[in-house]
Image (cartoon, rainbow, N blue to C red; front, side, top):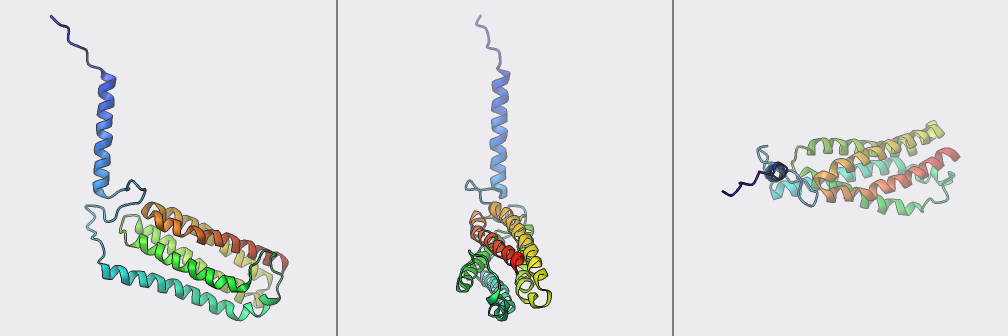
Length: 214
């Protein structure tokens, strides 16, 4: 009589574990989790959310662009009179670029911000709402910085510049959190914000110099 081989408990456990992992991954992908490229899929099954129509998406993109341009325009109104006023004779950082550089740079950054927000909004995942909340927070801080730095200086003096520095540091933190929230939903959206946060760090260095030397 031939002896029957004993079962291999370790091998069976490995096969069971592998099967469970593969089954779980399959269910996760069907439910709308992370794609292989690291980007979260839209409208998870069972949430009742349908993709937005093309018309709604186009209208939303225009809305995000307009919102960014409104923030930019309000900031421009707060700084217009002061750039040629007290700021023209202020002690600026040696690495400060010409005033003509700021407008084009901010235009590109505001456009990238709007597109990034739109990419996240259109996904309609469970993470979209908190991501958009953080985005709106950084937009408010962005709007607050220009009046604090430029418009309040004639009334508050150096205190306004230190207030501006506090706001822009909070803005940098908010944008960093926005990148962390956007990245898992849309990698492209997260990448679009990296030039923005880099420019904010540069702007913070200019703000610090102005506060310390004026």
